[in-house]
Length: 180
Length: 401
Ligand SMILES: Cc1cc2nc3c(=O)[nH]c(=O)nc-3n(C[C@H](O)[C@H](O)[C@H](O)COP(=O)(O)O)c2cc1C
Ligand code: FES
Image 1 (cartoon, protein in one colour):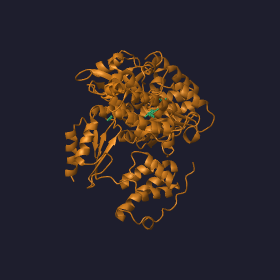
Image 2 (cartoon, rainbow over the protein chains, first blue to last red; image 1 turned 90 degrees about the horizontal axis):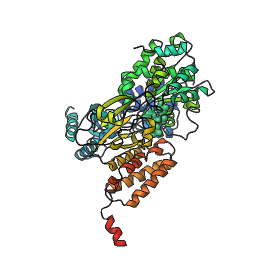
Image 3 (tube, each protein chain N blue to C red; image 1 turned 120 degrees about the vertical axis):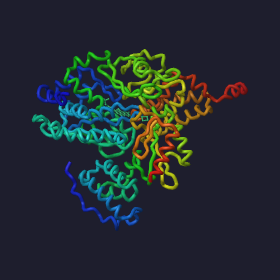
Image 4 (cartoon, rainbow over the protein chains, first blue to last red; image 1 turned 180 degrees about the vertical axis):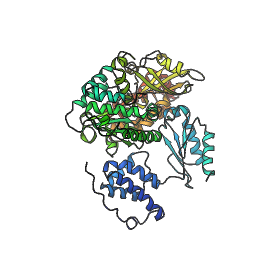
């Protein structure tokens, strides 16, 4: 496949005036994104990788970022949005500062993961998939972390915790917010 | 030990046809779930006209409770890369993709490094071992969708699109990645290639049963005492795996083992003397699947397990075809009704009928197999369903008479 000649990136600050983050950080994030786009020669089949990168930098996929990606890859926004909304790992909403992913895979389920999640939902007063009102913690679930031998398992800010009880999970959550 | 020797041997001492012949004779069958004969698949792709062909390694490992592929990718990524290169040589492809789920960051990291190493030493790239054979491998990362393990959905995902499956035929062997003939095999299938080339088909086929050759890795989890991976010759009994290797359950007794994940079923303990191979598991109403084995004891409710899997399939249905999209929602509702003691026997009958419909009419393997956990638990644990019926059903019926 011939590489498309990359276009000069449009002037973002005039095109996307309502970015929630301060413009310097935002600019840096767009630069990272540009590097990924360039490395993939602006090929549409790199869309998923580009979305991963965008989410990693911006934290979530806001509309403006999706629009930017669509323009850069010369794809209709509907396609970019269609892909971003199809995959579970892409988030179209901002997430909390910390996150806790409880595994609900079969091995964990058999070992009582649902009860742990119920308890966390109760204590945090949110449902799975939501973020606490102070923006501190997002509570998520996963299909399987591949740590089934340690069931029930959960990930706290990227760190796997195994053989958990509801109390352990609550303590780990508290530790996350205290360390700030 | 002896890494990439089989690839060297294949390139210099075997023709492409001879490699395929060896794999066919070994009796190796796909480890991704279906158990399709690997040699036959390779031969089909090799026969297809056209210059551009692709090799894909399915490392999506979506079955919850299974982590065999993860362990190979993290501990011996070169073995998988070498298997893919041999496949490329056999079918006439010079480009491979390995599709890894994003939930496995360490596997991605090790694979990336292994590919770099292999390129550096001329084991991947152009003119491998100074032969005329070129082969490169790229990594593609998933984004958390179970259905992307299905081969046509996986291909759409590599192309950068939504992971919607499409009807087969045409199979990927004819029309695959970017419309080109494509070979797609599972991680463990590729991991079996180098030993076959090194030690020969005869050696490989001496292990296992008549219809299932070689060894299989299982992920033993759930209520069993020793959780972890076990590699056993095909034909080992469930009892040996669960009770001897797994040490049984800590308290009480083993009630059943679930295999095949959301597409499989539960095997009650009375059948534990069954040798594990593709056919015998199918006869028991389940399947080999990728190799997850979840042990359940008396405390596990089989109705709730069925509900759990239906919830899974409901969430993972891509939404393209109605039987799967709407059927899984309805089935989940019916199961919830049963779990909450609100159902009647008629509901169970209706549920069974709907199971058949979803099975027969869905577009891809996800929908076609989604009813399996329900059907298998109904088959072996019907009393658990009946015990959950609406308590006043009896009196209501007699009052009407
Ligand atoms: C819903 C669904 C999910 C699947 N998930 C996987 C998977 O995670 N890993 C895998 O290797 N095969 C999976 N498969 C099977 C693949 O479609 C395909 O048959 C397999 O990768 C072929 O490789 P094999 O011949 O080596 O088994 C899945 C199939 C379906 C229908
Ligand atoms: S089922 Fe929870 S880690 Fe696999």
